Length: 332
Image 1 (spheres, helix red, strand yellow):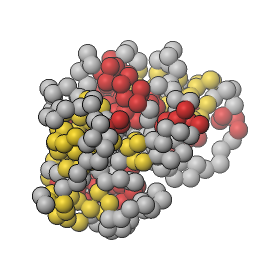
Image 2 (spheres, rainbow, N blue to C red):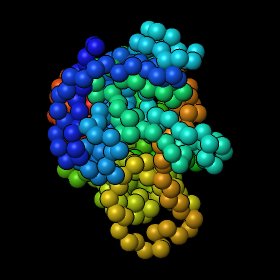
Image 3 (cartoon, helix red, strand yellow):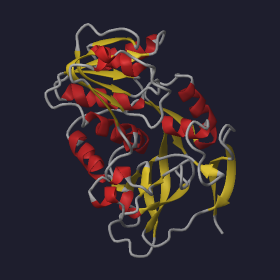
Image 4 (cartoon, rainbow, N blue to C red):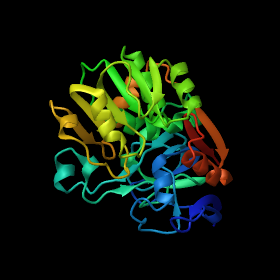
């Protein structure tokens, strides 16, 4: 049987290890994807560090920002063909039967599967995915620079969809993979963006200003003007009350991460005047289609640092330590 290379998580809290394992085969309704590039997401780090509930299967191949080529088709797959480029996101499949699925809210499915968490992901040369939860991608373009769109872009866009249409001044807390994509989209739509970075991250401030943000400062500072809305990408609970104080009356604070440290107590006055806090969970298929339509005629450049597959641990360490501008991407 043909083998492939994969970087495998033996157990949360342990480094990934290089493994040679049989190439997976697609079952009915699945496709085999030859991985061209896989982005390294903050959620991957949370899984690896044991900050999310332990994966139901170990050892596990992480990775859910996958761009690749269809290399095999399972039975009954009609929507893709061999050689087609596809993108694979975090939400791997849903039950299709629960209240949330029936009512078009599959991102809240009671029995979902997740790429790189409950099923093997893209830190490998090949992976098998549910054909219903992939996106066809244009053959043009660079796989490395497209990979961050599959989570940083998609989840960022879902968070962005909860920003009121009339919001002109938006704050982004944590200026990493998602924020640097979203900032470009917001700026192209005529909005003003303020970037908040961890104290001491001078490179992050410069990066935000270079991308066109009107202001960049520390996350414990106030922007020069009240914000209409704020999106929090950094997994730091203390940013929630900080963002509430930064937004105007009626402003919205969106928490975009899957994991966040505890939110400290704060005064009701910070929430009063109809300010709103909301979280974002996973994504819906229509979010992905809407995102790719939104950027189709725009020049959105992802800033990436490329790592060979075998250096996945280095990529995760760079993410942990805040040493990335933009996104890390693994290339097998």
